[in-house]
Every structure is written in C-alpha cells, then in structure tokens.
Image (cartoon, rainbow, N blue to C red; front, side, top):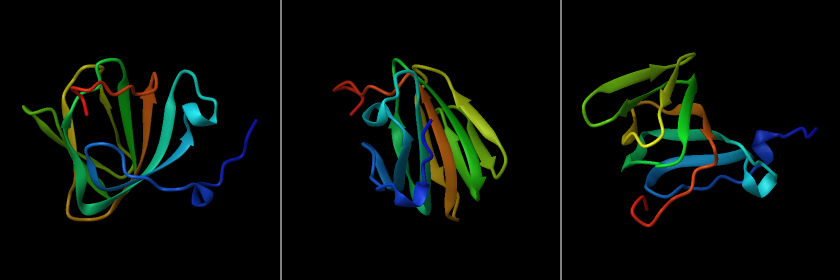
Length: 118
C-alpha cells in the first residue's frame, strides 16, 4: 500500500500535448503493470493533438471544469463529474473548453507510443 500526495509529484508535459501538466499517481516507473493513473491539469487553451494508442484504452474523469474530446467525427464535452471512455485504437483529441480543467486519466494497459503515434 502506498499513499500518494499529488502535490508532491512532478508535473510533466506528455508527447503531443500542450499546456497539459500530468502528474503520475500510478505508472510503470512506480511499479504499475496493468494501468496508469494520472492527475492532469489542462489550461483553458491547452490540449492534445489528434493521436491514437493502438494498444490501450483511456478513461477520462473530469474533477473540475470541462474539456472537449473528439474522434474526428464527433465532439463531446466532458464536464465536472462526468467520464468518457476512448477505446483502444480510436483516434482522439482533447482540448480545453476555455476554462482550466482538472481530470484523472486512466490508461489500461499502460500507453506505449510507437514512432507513428509520436
């Protein structure tokens, strides 16, 4: 068992993301084998460009604010208290919706980026 204080974790910017600061609550570097859990803070004008993960699913859960997620055909606004699942292999883009957003991101299994995905 391990207690994690999110404010003590270093924030980093992930590949293909701008003005999104990720703190790894549970990740491969901390011993995770089956999933990654990140606490993300996205500025209102931040986001991730369109990309795919061929081998993992994403679950977004918005804690504060709202964000838009598109698969190129449909755009969904995900607001505080709501979650969205992006299946493995589905292209997606997440963007701020004009206000800062805090969300949890669960990736299962841990995301592996191929050269095409970077």
